[in-house]
Image (tube, rainbow, N blue to C red; front, side, top):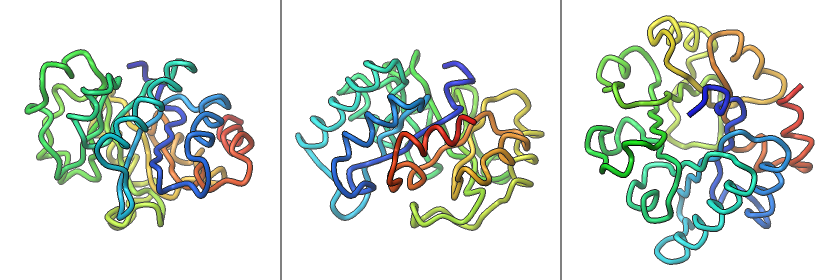
Length: 206
């Protein structure tokens, strides 16, 4: 993984978009998103063959635009569809329990603060996701915000390990994340709920 892959990290699942999810994802990829994560959560989340088909289609789109394709939490799905990597939370399986498939794949880990950092095994981790930086409605379990001060503290502790900021990030506040140690920003609603996806993506590239 290249550090710059984290610059514009789009996270999305079928329930995050009203309308054609695949159309939104492709438009985001075409407009400049640098990494994509499939996060299929919620009451109406796809399962079984429908989920596999959905993931395989997104994988193909990501390859079309040369963007790394990451799967959230589900190592079995990531391996089955040939994903470029996986992102794990603190309550998911441990990084050290992943199968050999992931030995040369991208591994991300959510690390909210120094307390989670102290209990995290980072030797095989390629990047961490830190937040929520700002209030967000996209994740019910996001927890309290850490602010840009939390990003700055995490950067001082992890040294050169790549870090992406998450949580309530928009075109008005993303630069403050970059100034405080994040290598990139990740988002769900800022793109998934945008009226003009291309314009929304380009707003993060200015």
